[in-house]
Length: 87
Image (cartoon, rainbow, N blue to C red):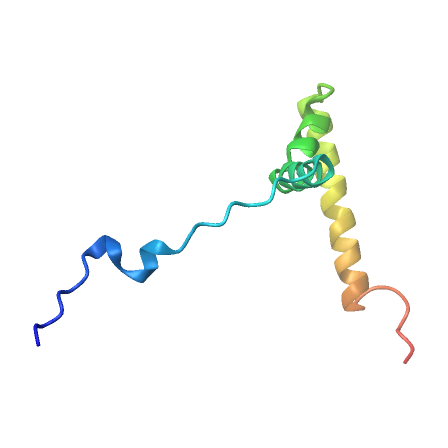
């Protein structure tokens, strides 16, 4: 018996697997994907911020107020300020 000849690199099984073509997406599916990508990138928020000019002093005031509000919410959640929680 003759020894079997080894198959060439491209004739092996893993090369014969056909690549599946993705199903074409409907318009609604494409729109959903697009909206998710835009939302994750924060593009809409950025556009809303830049819609109107905000003076530097107004920007500082807004950020200060946001920080105070965040701190108050943290204190309420940690129950260091406000009514005691009832179980």
